[in-house]
Amino acid sequence: MTHYKVFAGKALVGHSALESGDPPMGVACGKFLPLPAYSLIQSQCIATRDLPQSHLALSIACPNGDPVPADHGVAILDYSVELGEIEVHAVGIGYTRYAELFPDHVAAYYQDR
Image (cartoon, rainbow, N blue to C red):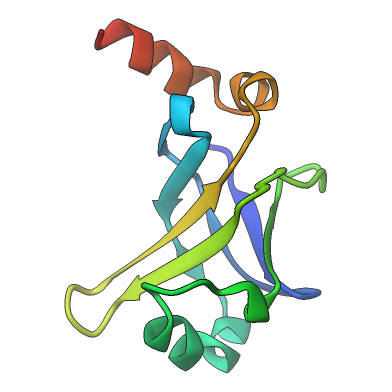
């Protein structure tokens, strides 16, 4: 399984397989697997999970280091207190690049139609 790297600024804060998404909306998301550095921003992620998180400078990179072009941002939705789950969402990935990065998401979308 491919693991994408999640950054806050230059700090690697976790990983995700980005195992699901919405191709027409350009959204890739998945379970967030935090690293110790996540503890530095966790309280901010919890407090702003329903708000823009641009102040955290979140980004996602492919395993080879190439950026995932999330033109509308990256968000960490931390529901660890309530549900024991944390997700990461990348929003605004152009369709051509989305199809290159997540061909399984695209195939599943068209199969379900």
